[in-house]
Amino acid sequence: MTKNKSLKNLRKWILFALGIIILFVSFKLSQSIANSNDTPPPARKNLVKEVYVLEVTNGSFQVQIPSNGVLEAHRRISLTSRVQGVMQTIKPLFKTGQKYKIGQTLVQIDASDYSANVKAQRASLYNKITSVLPDLQLDFNEGFDQWSQFLKSFDIEKPIPRLPIMKENVRLFVSGRGIISSYYALQNLEQNLQYYSIKAPFDGVLVSANMTEGSLVRPGQQLGEFIAPGQYELKVSLPKSYIQKIDQGAKVLLNSIDTNQTFTGTVERINAKVNTQTQSVEVFIRVSNQELKEGMFLEANINANTFDNVFAINRGLLNGDQQLYVVVDNKLELKKVVPLHFTETLAIVSGLKNLDEIVAQPLIGAFVGMEVLPSVITPSK
Image (cartoon, rainbow, N blue to C red; front, top):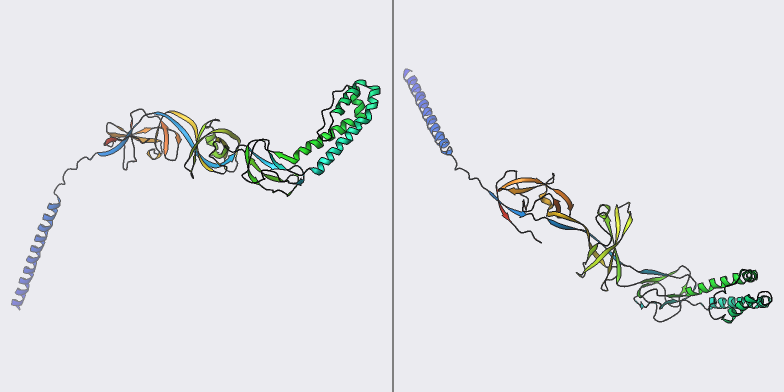
């Protein structure tokens, strides 16, 4: 019994000694690992970041406002009939694209019935004047001579001549016989007779024809449209905030997307009314060129105000406080500027001095006092 107890005690002491040995070995291993991590890292070098900078050269900047629109003829008339009749066939035919000279007949409407009525009224007036000549000869010798000369120049096939200059007593006499009223009624009929023939008011082209020869034309019916080629207007709508920057007569650069052609126009008119829905104002640009056609789509860059002593920068360089980074003695500093105008990509600012070096690209992690190595780049024109 005593022997077994001694063996148990011996085994306990052996296990206890092994545990102590294991703990000691573990402690030494962990200490050696910890000592190996305590090796001080190599000293970090103070890295200086290279940045691209622009040297400021202040100057003038011409503001250009982009817009677009469809070209329309500057001189355009709608051909509308004021009388009724059958459209006659004349040369050249009334066709779209036909060119006409000033004074050339565009449309001729049959006026035979109306012309016969006018001749009948002329004959009636002639008879009235003839019937009063004996009375004029008896009472007003001077009036008799005047109306006798009037009848000699009277031709029923031609427009009536002008009334003679009469004394008041002669005028009252012939007016009482209904001659004056008949004269002006006939003059009105002759005026309407001119509406049966429509002539070209200027050299131009018929751009649309709604009627053909032989068609019955009614009063108020639109016959077509006539324009003068080579002189056009471009109507564009601009925000009302831009209107104060534009002067009448300002030069405008026009570009055709289809033909890659460039034209120069001028601002001719600026509407005084603001569109209530879009809050925009209509601007009319005049351009003259024989290569242009009505209906062409053009892009316009309107020359507006000119700013002096300014510099153009990338809009992304400005922060919310209208500041940007400049390099002074190889360190970054923030400088306050005054934005005067913005384009899609640029900000036109004042407040910079010539030869100031501004950071040309947004810099991640930039802060005031950061050391940098500036590298000057040349701005693209």
